[in-house]
Amino acid sequence: MKRDRGPDVGHALLIGMVAGAAATMLWGRPRHAGTPLAGGPAPTGATEPAPSGATAGPATAPAAAGNGAVEELRASKSQARGTWISAAVATVALLASLFTLSGQVRINAQQIDLNTEADKRAAQVYASRVAVWYTDGLDATSTTPAGLDVTVQNMSPATIDNVRIIASLTTAAGAGAGDAEIAIGAVRPCSASALRIGAPPGTRFHRDTDAVTPQVQLKLAFTETNRDWYLDGANLVTLDDTNRHLVPPYGVLPPFPTGRKVTTSQVADCGEAF
Image: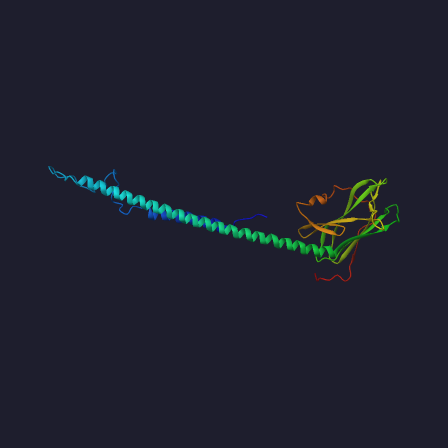
């Protein structure tokens, strides 16, 4: 998920910049705008030419220079004061933005925790209410292969879509031959879909010989709302970028031969309490 600092961060920085500029304008202005700085030109009309033959007093020029130096010092102090105030306001704005960002990070972390709990809860619901099993189908005709009569049952509160049945295969000599699959579409709530599947030519279903009765382990992949699921025996997981490799994209695996259409039936005692 993307983590956005939110509009508060930009607002805080903008307030800091405006406040700093205002402080510089207010505090950096000289108190006597009409008095020139030392060495600066005299304002127009500020002085009149001395009368003819008049002699200026010896203290007049030094006094003017001294006043200019004082005013320059005052202006420098005012500008320095404005700079410090601007820096202080900018620091406060930065602290406010950091505080806002920290709060947004906490909110994002809490949202991730909530999503994780929701996924765990959904997994518990589907683990107990979505199931797949089979019985051996030994009879065969010219259009229906011998194989497995597979049933997918959905007693969850939502329709499961893009349902794919997957099983492992071996060769006639017992070597691994990869997986095969068949897609059966959607299975609505409180219903079950059944069909016959056979092993592709030259292969047979892999059976777990460690069990008392060798069993074929069927796997199920399906979509619910906006989540992808993978049921492998008794383990049900949500598929994401970290484990999506568990189920190849549809069309990569060879298809199971089938001669019977998918039949759908209603499931009794399917309640809505979860």
